[in-house]
Length: 390
Image (cartoon, rainbow, N blue to C red; front, side):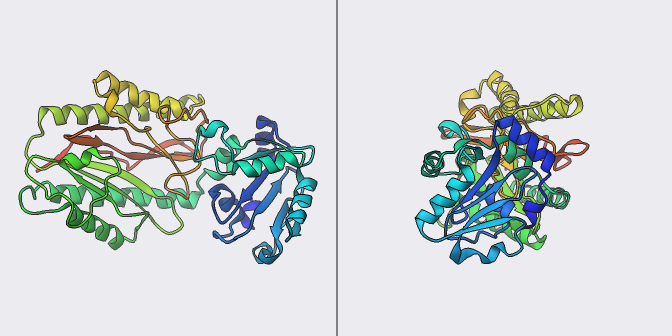
């Protein structure tokens, strides 16, 4: 239960005060709540309902099933075991009655990456005399932050990922008309990452021509495209070192000497939108002004809309990255949701605006940001500035 022991009690006290809660009630069932899993360090174990109540200056209280007490050996607090549902309800009533508890809920499912507690559990807590509020600031403060080791490994992974991507794009753009398939390039990228010791979160996205306009396209052998001359090439790749945080990047190329005017216009709009978002983040880091996720999205979106491609930018600008590739912290989003959570030092996220023209092509440029002790750090250090061409 190492993660529980490391909670800063003063920070927990101020975080609970900010949301008007007496304590933080962590809930998990079969590993569905990554926030609870990060704190409890149970390794995804547990087939029964689990609750852990945290209050500043008081011992933590765990409500755990009698057949799943082994992971709680050494737990630095009180354990209330249960088996029958009546025992569970009695234990929870003792813990929550008359109290306001923070849980991983998001009103109206506004931020689904935060909305981890089932409505039925919220109903139960209320029926037992408790009041539930959102733990959003607590999740950002405690669960979304990177450790120094995680950050160091991310920075290394980011530079290796960029090197693999650039090499793969440089190879691909010379293969127009020579039989290179999306699946073959995907396998080449995967092998290169594994050769560098990186563990992919899943297979990279590789899209040629019209398939680059499908943001979550997955090439399938025998059904994928073969690269022709003068086509857009997109590679979206992700990987991490064990114990680290993933690097998540998208790189773009053109299988010819000179991109068409339309391709160049789209690339310029996407790149400049990315950089506008990064400039806003850097400015906030220097000034100390609080910055919310939706504001970062707005900066990128304004540039792309001004360029005339706003209707084709159909996803948020970026997502939280923590131990999960799509994490629980603030997202750079004022489009799919309005994420008004403040980005705190120690958090990481992607910045990845994109424009997708149906039946033509798509362009995305993705980098990551870690808000470190000295301010926001963009990874890789040298983001893509121009399309890679043959």
